[in-house]
Amino acid sequence: MSRHALAHFCSERHNKCPESKYRRPAKCTKMNRNLIASTFPKTSHKSLAPLAKNDRNSNDPFDKEGQSIWVEKGKVRVRIPVRNILYVKAEHVYCRLFFPNDQRVLKRISLDRLTSELPSGKFLRVHRSYLVNVDYVEHFNASKILIGKTVIPIGRTWRKEAVSRLRQLIQ
Image 1 (cartoon, rainbow, N blue to C red):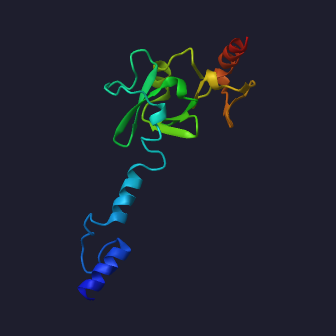
Image 2 (image 1 turned 180 degrees about the vertical axis):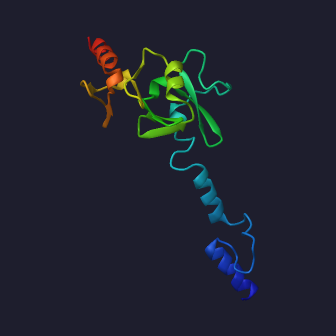
Image 3 (image 1 turned 30 degrees about the vertical axis):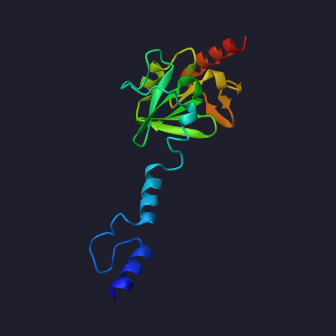
């Protein structure tokens, strides 16, 4: 294979060169675009910008008043107001925070710690895996809560407290 044909093959494939054990250098623009796309998948830090505040100088994941939370997206840290969280779903040692406009963020924190850090008047634990913002509850009964199009189950352990608190909010 000639040098020209080899260079063409490498530029077409963006893969390992057949006559070399090394990958192509970082000059390849398609490879760089793929690297950037894998670093910031569907939502980037720019999509979280409308939810964020301007000050970004804290090491604590929560601010002093419990009004906002720090979220990392790639290497970027963004402060998001707590009032924008619709609900939280626990996934083992992570919590997935759900926001309006189908935005979601995964944060490494336990649901118990997150429950204790968030304002108790706004958030209610309704299930082993769910924490809901009571401001966004549209409909509820003894076994389910509806937030947007999402149905969230109410666990037996939290049923009595959750239903009584939601009824108090209605009155």
